[in-house]
Image 1: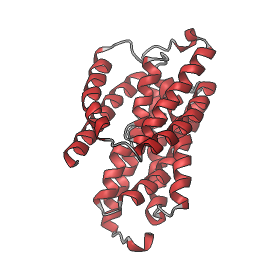
Image 2: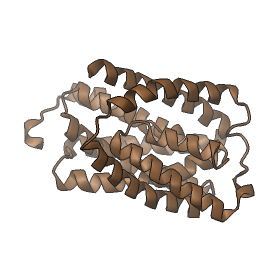
Image 3: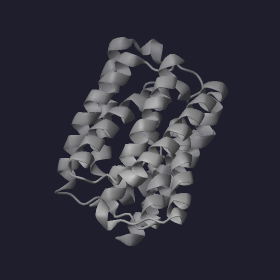
Image 4: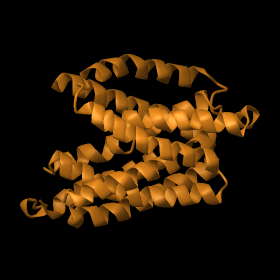
Length: 260
């Protein structure tokens, strides 16, 4: 696959800063793929090769942001791990369903839902600022976390864009984590799904290593800076970037509808 790709120094200059920015945004509120994938496509990387190459850089970047959140005790480990396990199952179910059902209906649904979520996030002063998850009890958190992982995993396998952003929304609204803990939990789920996807793309030869390796360095740098900024700034920063990620997702969905 890779022998058909020839990138100029200018192409690298265009793509790599966007991969850094994607890692930075993804570490804070998810949605990094909404920035990096169009950058890959803009220099002529075919869609499946772009997806695999993007998974390579995002996977390594997520390792570092997850490690930073773990060291800062910003992850509810049992809930995050169970969510990750169910997300892998959900992703498989979603991908299987996608083979038989058009994503067009989901695009229309998201055009309505995303603005509503953005407005609720902006107008709700309490959502995500105070963690009340411990009041639910571990058993209940595990149940909701597993269901959240299954549902978002299904979405990821069926459609994909903004998976981390939607998972943060579920963690804050249903499990009552603050944005910081919700984001930390999300990174564990993202890491599990990224590793699984990367293995799949690598085995099928859909990773362009000449770009994936420098892209991974940029993604790691962005993730490290983004996660450290979250540790310093906390919930307010995540909420602002979370709304930005929702707007990016809305733009992607509208583009999808116009392209159908």
